[in-house]
Length: 124
Image (cartoon, rainbow, N blue to C red):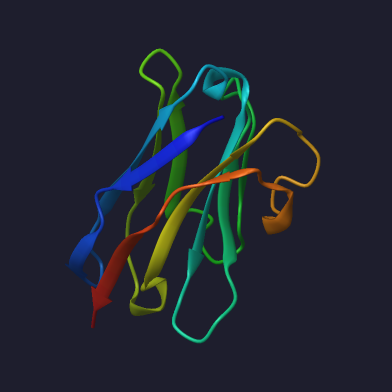
């Protein structure tokens, strides 16, 4: 069982930056693949970025490529999402997720564990 807790959300102006953190507890996080999803009001939960268990492979949604960077520190059981050049359309609740399988890293329903989410609001 893996438990995930996100932090680092907040209010930022367009063009600014935020760094989200995902603290994981449980014995398997260092061997789990990890991802960030987001959900804006009235919209479906959307894939943002994913990273393999070793950190060697990363994936990004088209809307965040070149602006967001996903990373992890297995020694600390932590995952991160660095968000630069934020836009108002990035406003959403951001969720950390983890799973053991490597297939479908951008597929929401393939993830086994989810955090409670952290709100990111970008003002124009």
